[in-house]
Length: 118
Image (spheres, rainbow, N blue to C red):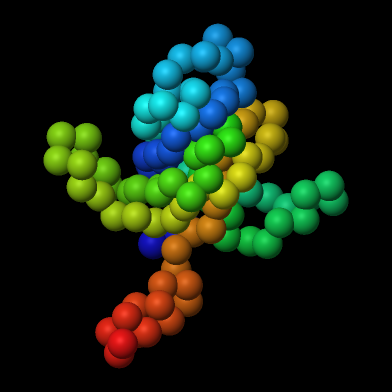
């Protein structure tokens, strides 16, 4: 399900890129934090030659949020949604974004088949 859509990203960050949030429990690794907004694809630059397929939303979560899920169609009341990627690193195109690989069939099919046949 790659592509631009509203996403929710979750993690346990130890820091925030927003100084006003530093020291809050959500930014000391003690509590779950999240960001939500429209996902955008990270564009490679000369200084940051990332492969295509790195998506995420504007987010101030720092280190410790890596590995957390990125959901589409997330329902805050039920906690259900579709995991479409994970948090890997920050990206700064004028604003801070938290991005990571977008799950595609090419990424998810091999482990699915291994699990089905193990």
